[in-house]
Length: 273
Image 1 (cartoon, rainbow, N blue to C red):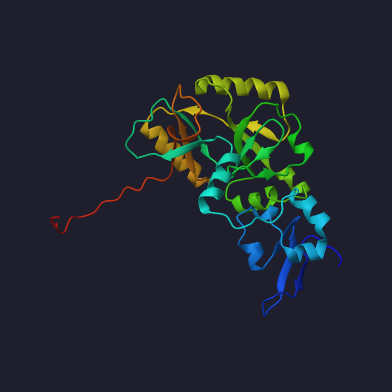
Image 2: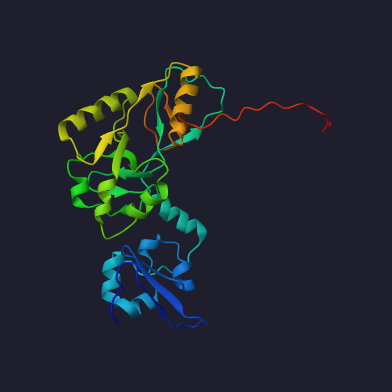
């Protein structure tokens, strides 16, 4: 059988009454059969007997990196595997609307795709590889960087559709890698940011830039900046504690701030516990 071109699909008879649909979307092949749909692997690394029949075993092994379809395993085993491949990223907590954030470092909360640069390639939060073109990676240092692959505000789905493709399309030129931290440095955030400024001055990567950081001067400043960002279609703000270290996992040194949910209400009754 001939291979599928990008965007093409084909029906193939299987064990079900209705034929299964095989499709190629940007180099990511899919099948509607249960064997393909129920795999725990990322969609770009899944295969099945129908795709192998269509494309051949050699082509499928090359496409998925030599990983055969997984056998049934326990939920805990899958979780342990995902944990072992995931990069050790610093993750945010949600601001409680009361903590004083004066003096914290403020930046826009990007609605892009979180990406970890390990010095050679990009990986997702779960450790999946992003197939970025070589020209997109040009100028990036050989040291780890934490950031987001970002297209623009309100374009999350479009960004995902680009960075998840395996055929390295030219639409990557619309994407920027916005960097906000240097995970390998055991130094306060201010020193890590100064290090990143030096890296970008030295390497000047064409498709990456350092995310701006401003000091929060208090609640009025926070409210004003949050309103400005959201009026432009942004998600909200990120606040980093001054002097904080980079630590893997969720931390109160990194807080996400979205719209205030203040409202007035009239108490009309009380029910004792």
